Length: 468
Image (cartoon, rainbow, N blue to C red):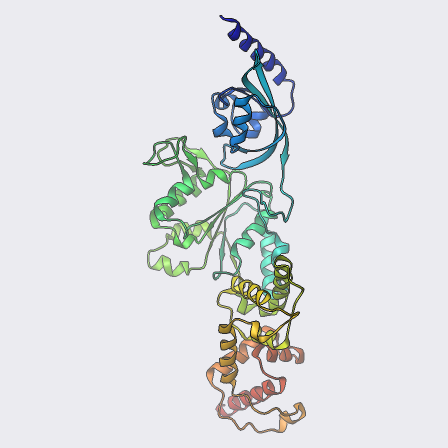
């Protein structure tokens, strides 16, 4: 054995003794960046045993090319920020200390010590991977429907039962799912989301279940874990589950029954520890009848059903949402704080919001960008919303104003109310109630005066009496 080899072996022996005495995660690598030793703490950090860490390269274990350069060039570093690749597929940021191993002034490798894990502060621009951004405090509004939903969701949050969230597009189904995860016993685990409608069918299977090396042409070297493995210890959220093809529905059902998953091209059955939540805006019951969705999978998913109401059914929350978005975009766009004119408020309340909260957010951002002054006026409202409000107002055929004291003695001069008017009145009263204050809010919601609403109600009661 030459002197160089003896020196190399002596260093390794000394390092092995020292590693057992160090409480920080430590890797020992050669000049090529290949692991030749690690301590127990490092095994826990990477989620790999010593056997699987040995002979792994830094390119596989980290996502920091500069780290390999420090090792190869024999350069020391005190607080080098690196990202490690956990075996579950997640990434974590650490500060790393690099101590070169020199033999006769030549770099033979390095000792890498992780000194501190970096955790993103709440609200920072750089979000931690697979961390939630929303809690129940993020769900704005105090309407009866939204309070009931939040109360039920908080009750089931601690459970591990599967949840199916129903609701139109843009209502905030993923926000609710993240809030449930944040309040669950799994809050320290990852929240992994996948949109089944946004990924091609040919890729969706590998995204969900992972694949082994050589499973198909172009398969990544070393394989790749699927979302079920990445969500281990946390929550997996399957958005737009109604768009999942039937053959994958069958495989998903088996995974839920067996609580185990097999990667594509693999033969090992991997146990999973995840809480599953799914969401859809589709009529799943109709899809079952049309044989587009498996009934047995539906029953597996629909253990705890939750329904997120559309914005048009919770318009009493509209002002709170608008106020929140106005403040948020004013700060983000470096604009002075703004307020809405009464005309703008009436227009926004009269609109039916088919795009729900997502559409409202876009509209508020548009108005904040467009309005130069402090008061948002009608001209800053998107044209299509103004057009809708004008058409709705014209449908009412507004009469000249009269005093409230005259309402009971005035005989309506218009023809009978049309079906659209009756439906709008009943919807407004259902939302706000039939008290004096409720009728006042209903009139604001409909874009008419209180006296006009009373005339419509008088006419409606009169027509009902005549039919009897």
